[in-house]
Length: 456
Picture 1 (tube, rainbow, N blue to C red):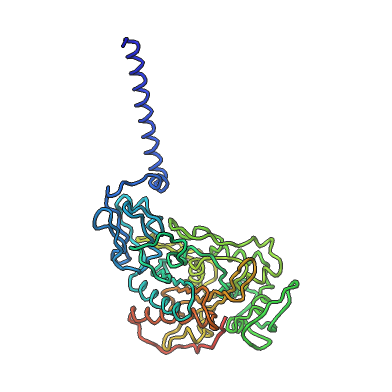
Picture 2: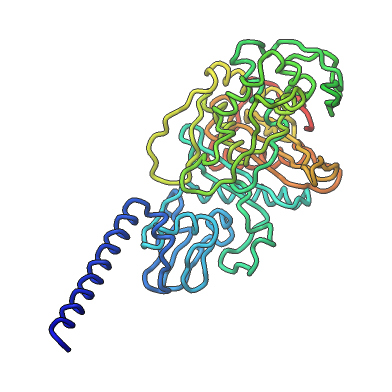
């Protein structure tokens, strides 16, 4: 080979080496600037490193890799839908936190969660019992620490074992983290937030009276109430009887854009209420295109979709004296910056009202509890189903100075007892009983006498 040919070969080789070096630098910069994207796009060789652990609030291992290629979930079915699972052999995360935290876990780094194993267990026990009793298709229960927004429990049911996943999880309802991944109509739980909006705007008091027949016509549509009640109600009684007519009539004192502003402040339009973790996007049309019927529907929780996580965080604003704090699933977390939504006196007075009218199915003798039921029809093929409902309950434990906010969602309960009071409220009550026992708080004489609220 001539000297000229050799020179050309060396030039080509040097050019190739320079190209590879630049590609390596570019990849390094990509990893540094966008680690989630970069690491997720790079396959990990099976058994090349031990995968990082998922730890509970107290350090209890929830997911661990004792040896290469083996992923173990020490607490079995507990929090399985939240934790998710990985691919056989490589352990690459496919669902849940195993997927969302793939870039971190694949490097062998541990992640500590806010989940409390005891509270998670008691929430699951209460939820699974409720699902069995009602014959429901699925359900979720969330427990959020009031001051910090930390999720102490995220229960889903039915249960499944993440160590033995089936081949087609899309066909198995038990695999899904419905608490985060399903957006649905929140029903009458929203009446408490509409009431808080009206109180905060100064257009009503809890004693403001409103004419509330059992039905009213709006724009060619008829809005009905379910629970029999007097023809004239105070705002507190509107909550007690869960009157669609009453709350929608009172809400005419403000413009739709005002209600939308409060819903936005409560993050009902936020597709990412919690960083890193995948959450289903809520759906709410802009207020400037609501008609009068759509506005009325929004006042009692129809016509828009939010996840159980969104509902929990919104109710937590009432528990936290009117301040919204973003939910979080990770420790350690910086002290949250509260976002004022309602005046403190509004939140406190509404909590007291909800404690006074809470359904008997949610009452726990000796312990002050407050909350609101909801029963939402489910849209099937563009129309509200007469058979499929979602039963809900959201409230505070304890009512006067809440430590936690709890939301319970039960989808498609069977039989005649399908309302929130009958299906979701007992789950809330059992969770409350377990929490008071866990905290070592003895029963006390309550200063408020609960009513017999609604069944909606």
